[in-house]
Amino acid sequence: MLLGVEAASKPDAIKRLIQLLVDGGAVKAADQDAVFDAVMDRESRGSTGLGEGIAVPHVRDCKHVDGLVAAFGRSDEGVPFEAIDGNPVHLIFLILGGSGTSEAHTQFLRTLASLRQHEHFLRFLRDAPDEAGAWDTIKEMLESLA
Image (cartoon, rainbow, N blue to C red; front, side, top):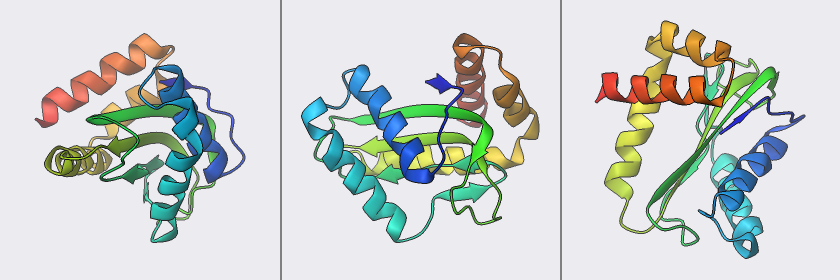
């Protein structure tokens, strides 16, 4: 999780979130560029900027991860992400699904897409003062939507 993402572009924001996964051991440093290329390939087929300040860049069947891994970033300034509403993105959830995680991947994407209907959660996530507060909000959101 990274609060205060400073990124001037979609690729820059995605690189920062991939670095979080490298730092956390979910992605090998040697695979970092390949993961970035896979995410950007997916983005080239249509932006994952959902609108309402949310983006969910993701890759299915990513051979560079085991299981389903995710990173979250918040940008106070907003990142130009080619979102469907044309507005900058403030909340970015990067999802990488390894082999055999297609069903879990799809369910997680559905859950995140439904967040736009929960403005109070989004407000709490945007306003969380620290990573612990943001993590608590994310856990609460996921539990309420399960």
